[in-house]
Image 1 (tube, helix red, strand yellow):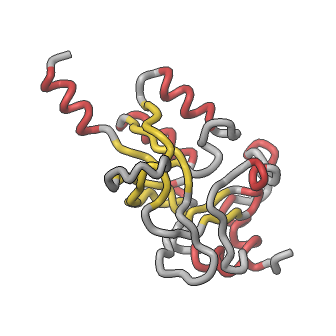
Image 2 (cartoon, one colour; image 1 turned 30 degrees about the vertical axis):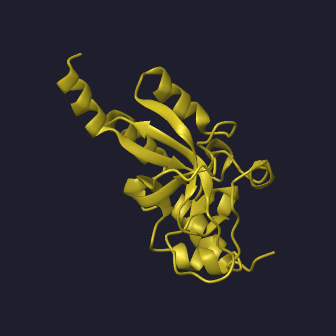
Length: 182
């Protein structure tokens, strides 16, 4: 590959910040492993959001990053993993995150390296809960979020193949936000 082709390939790469089930050690990471194996993604490092944001769990223990930077109460610099992905890798990622179905939106996020080494701000993209229900989800969670999606939060995660088949995920979200918190 020529130097120019390498530069063009690098320019087409998208930096994606993963904070939930796509991270190493979590149920959907196998997709990232497949993308890495096909040279469509590579791990950049551990990062956290520059600005505090709400990170919560919704129906089926699914994690949601909320694009509510001015929200009050428990917001944290969200910790996760940064990957560089090819345009071809965005297709299965967007599909998993239900972009076309209104589950999530892929939007910009500013990040810092997690090693506290004072690195430069990195511009990337992250999958945020869709704006149509983000505020309701935040209220439903008592406006309390967490810093990192860990094994503690993941214990409530229900794989897609084990979820009820008689309703859509958006219907599950509506049921979740309309129920009282327990």
